[in-house]
Image 1: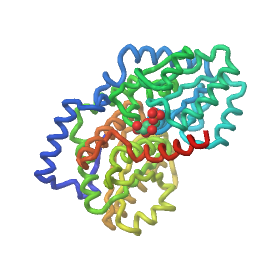
Image 2: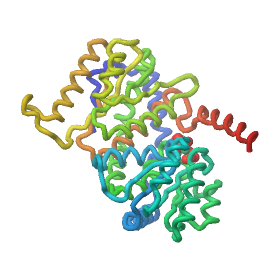
Image 3: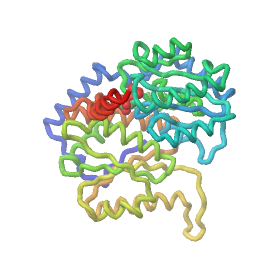
Image 4: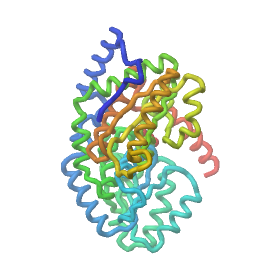
Amino acid sequence: MRLNFNYAKESLPISLEEREKLAEIKERLEKKEAMLDWLDIGTCVSQETLIQIEELSKKIRSSCELFLVIGIGGSYLGSKAVIDGIRPYFSEEKPEILFAGYQLSASYLVHLLEYMKGKKVCVNMISKSGGTLEPSITYQKIYQYMKENFQDYQERVIITTSPHQGKLRDLAIQENLTILPIPEQIGGRYSVFTPVGLLPIAVSGIDIHQLLEGAKSERNCFDDSMQYALVRKHLEESGRVVEAITFYEEKLSSLASWIQQILAETQGKEGKGILPIINPNTTNLHSIGQYLQEGRPIVFETVIQVEKTEDIPLKEYKITMNELNHLVLNQVAIAHKQVALPSIIITLEELTPYEIGKLLYFFQLSAAIGGYLLEVNPFNQPGVEAYKQLVNQELLKSG
Ligand code: PA5
């Protein structure tokens, strides 16, 4: 993984105050303050749980055609990012992996229940709090279906939740279901390397050891994550308050959603933070690309580039299609530089579990450092609670 700031001059200089602040942040990370257990893979997942995940995934892969992951926000975005990033397009590989409980579309649930009919289904319900509205509602309906349709339903439903408390944990114990633990000191959006991400990823057949090795290799790369956080801070201060998370490889679409979540929920609070938007290219060069080039100068872009992919030769241009995609990426960065729109380019050699593990860890670390630089709490999401309380008030009235 390589970072290129050539198209963004805002990286330097670093003020004395910032230097001191960064030294202080480094110390907080080294001391592993509260909610920082994601820093070490060993505290994301114990050896014992890792073995349990491997055994469960083997069993699921041999007995199940459809694996359903129920969760919202940090409880599903990480595994979806890795699975969509690695699994081939249009794959018929079994088990098929579907996600639910990340929205409240009744129509989606009706169609899903219909689609499940006659298939060998396994379910992974994921919620740290155990009480989030969208996955809870979905789970009730899916669990009822599992009970009605599978004699061995207790073998087919796995609950990933807090190891010590919560409604979901109590329910799982009561129903004699397998429970995987989410460490207390790890928040949802930082949980991709815990059982939250690992079980669905392992079920998809992706090598979770390589993913974790990639993450571990970034553990001491504070400087890269720090530099990205600092450049973003400088850009925000210069009025660039929107970040286009840009990618030219469709497989990165879910990864961009994960990046959007970790940056927005970590830093968008107390009237501060950059608004990350997802920008698939070259698709968006024909829509919001116009705004980026000539609209209000409030945007910068972070481009995720993948060097090697499957490829097709284009005889008429004497280059390959992947080379053409890179050519467009570079020319867009130049066109943006001409109008002073900064681009940061992050290059992955290939979409492998190892490289994706590195990238996810890099963003986790950088998001947290950026939160500390803004002097906000990187690990809460009080703004999300606001809507939940208002919904609950109304539900109490009608219930
Ligand atoms: O990052 C976070 O903490 C959130 O996005 C949560 O993951 C999300 O709200 C789901 O919460 P829970 O796992 O408690 O259902």
